[in-house]
Image (cartoon, rainbow, N blue to C red):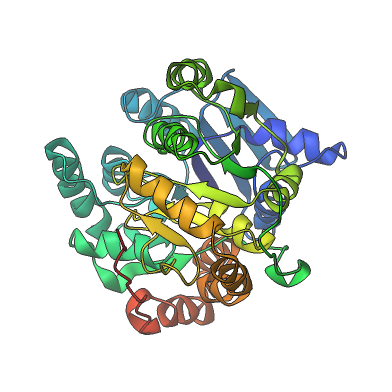
Length: 398
């Protein structure tokens, strides 16, 4: 059995060598992923981990029977090149981590048994996205795509809403080694300036413009605010916006920080900001899990993947996406009411526990590859329709 795992971005080879040399995780769950992939060689004859969007092109044997390829290919706009590369690898099993209808159809045409292990939401109303969803639904419903995993129940339901066969849908999660039980409940600190923190891609779709406009709004209301943003992206563009809004002296762009530092920054902050816009396709971001672990209250948009997982004024403060004034209002409501602040911090553990999925990425991939009757029965029992879970919904106060 030759298993090929296709990953949209990241650099498996770089992470493998860094961690094997005793380095730290750069991204969430890198060590977990690498250990799981190494473990797959107990099942498969060969494993190839193919990273699409790498800055350099490479092909290296990391261990006997474990190969890592950096394609340097954008798999949606250069899908033809990706198909040519996959054809040379001759996989017998394929794990696809992003929703490319052409790749799923190619696998079906060549009868390569396929697992979808996605981490995306499908809620856009744009015409071009609706057409892509139509093609994706057809590809995922093909019998060749045997199981469809997506990161979180809401993300699975977004596929169900497209007409994807719910009998094949499984909600998965990574394995979390850190829990809120490791940290104390936070109370509203008595200091002169509020400290806010954001971790993620620095781009429009993640709501970074709304963050900066909300900071400007809070300054106009005579609140002292300090903001730190961690992540790569359009940093210079948003530094310019901060200057234009007159808040640059209160905003610090940290660049990319090691995963081991994220919780420390969150613990030091008074609030963690997660303002993703509706059209940003994601499951439940790890930032939310990490903020819950740090017990630092979250102020988040009403992105379809957040609503239900986070409940307004109970586990977070929610605001209508792209509304910077409402964003500022909710930050203000959180940081001027000590009882509310402590309650949300206290509820972090219960919220975090409720978000845990019984199916981890390792379970999904290993059991599908093992293909024993017991493993197939286990997957069948953990389908979305079998779990009978319904995430609560909560209207956003404005």
